[in-house]
Image 1: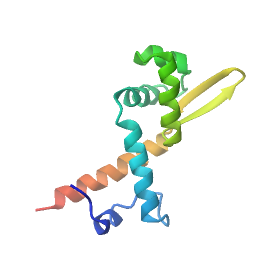
Image 2: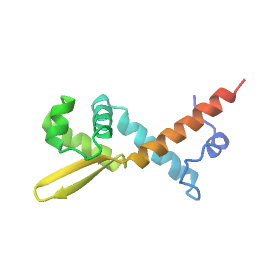
Image 3: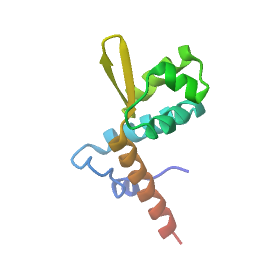
Length: 119
């Protein structure tokens, strides 16, 4: 099932007004694609519960991911705009981008509302 462009326009991503529709679709699909892998979803959910952020090693320990794989997953999530990183010396702390998750959730909630309005 595909969403027609006219329907998608009515689901414009909050905070993305003025951006071309194609950019919005690309942003949403990039984020959903990054979250479609179970380990990445676990990483995002774990980071969401640690406001102070976590190192890749601690994140791997908490999610059960291999440490080498955690770094790859974090790169995918960071490239999708779902995770940010901050370096302090040799340590890197990762945090979930709460605004990006809220924006994605708002978009999906809007889509669900449109679906529920259908006869």
